[in-house]
Length: 360
Ligand SMILES: *Cc1c(COP(=O)(O)O)cnc(C)c1O
Image (cartoon, rainbow, N blue to C red; front, side, top):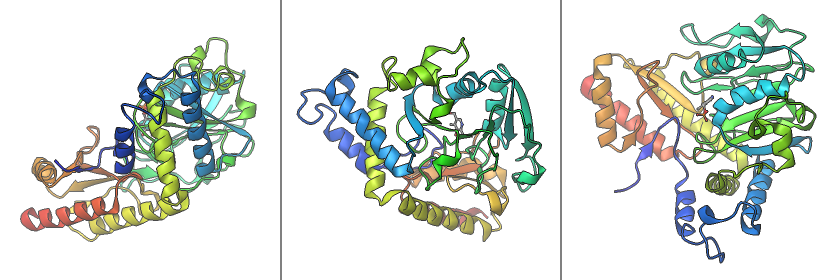
């Protein structure tokens, strides 16, 4: 069977070229006599793979020398706890922006460690939007400000970076990291579960400014302590070696595509096309205000909810997989991560037009 177009929000599509390369090297990596899965994480082969991945990620994102890159485990969800444990640094309060489900989860976890000041709440209106920054109630004593640049479930995305002065800016970029260039220097900490836009599940990327490292509270588990992990080059314990290797192949693939400027142009083109198709139809609707529509996750509803199951079944038969919206919002969601080819978006749009003609 040919590979279908996978619109899953995560674990998500990987570049076919990466999968083929992984397949080739699966039984034996280069002339090592071993699969990457079988190698010691302390051996020179894996150390070379790990360093290359870090260097490529640093180059792609333009990570300044002031920031460390950590390759951890525990997912973005683990970071919901690690962030207050590491970044409170003796303070008791942190600012959080609430723009949807993932913000709420980050807030709920942070509340176990500190007083959370929700500076603004968005994503409940119709169309959904993000409160403009002048309306935010910032706490001058906050240890940091946390926000979710892309809400994977509702498809609400910031197309701007908050201004927070001296307060460290912390961003859950799980579903948007590597989708476009960013100015990493503006952030105190960026984190992402790998399974959206980086590689397989099991790996968590943390990019953290050096002066925020080494100040974790005493009860912080060692594997979540940025200081200890940084000293150990993310190998305090056995890291997810194979996921790290595949992420490295994805970074090389991104460089082959022309880097993040080029990928951003492709991503914008893919998203614009799909939103245009939705907006020009009476049958489909996207519930997000045009100023904060996600490039990566495009939710849409059909005029007739009773057609949802048929839409999904017909889409699957046409080789378009995992379009079901998140259980909390219903409808459909097409995730258009870096590895989704433009031809996949074209196929989805053609299918949607055809479905509307038959059932609309
Ligand atoms: C998927 C996702 C998470 C959860 O990631 P895990 O790696 O499963 O913990 C958190 N935040 C955002 C924005 C996500 O998209």
